[in-house]
Image (tube, rainbow, N blue to C red; front, side, top):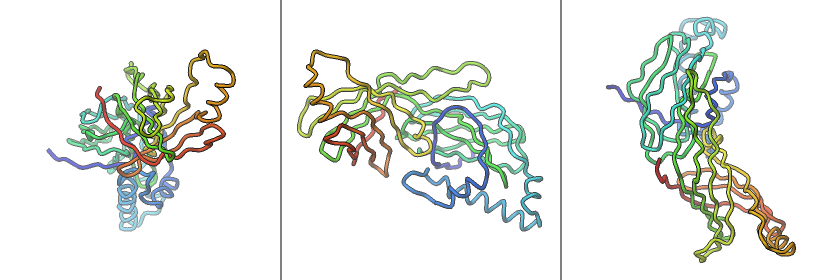
Amino acid sequence: MSKAKVVGLSVVAVIVLLSWGITRTGAQQEAAKGKTAESPKGYYEKLKAIWKEFDDEGKRLGLDRAGLKAKYPTPEIRLCPLLRTVPGGTSDVVVEGKFAPGTKFLFETYNNVDTENEQVSTSGYNAKIHVDSEAWPGAARLHAITATSNKECMPLYIGGKYQWELTAKNGWIIKIRTMDERFIPPKGKNRMRMMPQPICQVEFYRQGETAPFEVREIELSLDNGTSQGGYSGSLKDPKAGKESAAEQERKRQEFGCNSLNFRRAGSGVQGGMSCGPKINWLDITGGTMKFLGD
């Protein structure tokens, strides 16, 4: 069995198993930027290599852009079922549509994925996908690429339960843990869905302390886990207690954090929080992620 290593930018995530097209011009602008901290692993390099191959073919055959477009019509993605897997898991991806001979397929993801037994025809694409055991939650975006077009869909969602431990610039430790993944298995032939937004518990610790001084919940958006390796959400206000108005105002001034975003940066984590008047913006300077299970 042939095995090809596909390391891509966003094993993404919007999982709107949508299939919308992005023009080659726009994608070329992104590809020209090269690999950055916010771009997928190797995706743009592979994309540039694919389009160079098409350009070289056009020169060899004496075809201009119109000629290449006639030879390679825009791909049509008609069916792109959403599959759920977890880090270390395997899924059989099947995409149906209409593809000109010579159409190239490429996964865009922030995680490492291996493809095995890739089969490409004018009516579809299928392959066995192996997800890295250290993958973060999100989705895998599959691109169908021709000389002048780039169509995409989301056939794979990487779910499960996770825990992050982040370090803030002021010394706080922030622990985020999945409470409810909120994934509902899609039904029907097309099985198109939005990516779930898991509910997580967020605990805030001062340096050297073992008990959290603040506990909140967050509805974590995974959409940027695909394209930028990032996650974000608004911190829910705590349930009303018996604290006086003065005490509540003191907490708002000293804490008052209302939103959180973070993304992987190399082997670490970067991000920030919007907080109360005494803090304003608080940088996230490091952190780790741990997969807790299905």
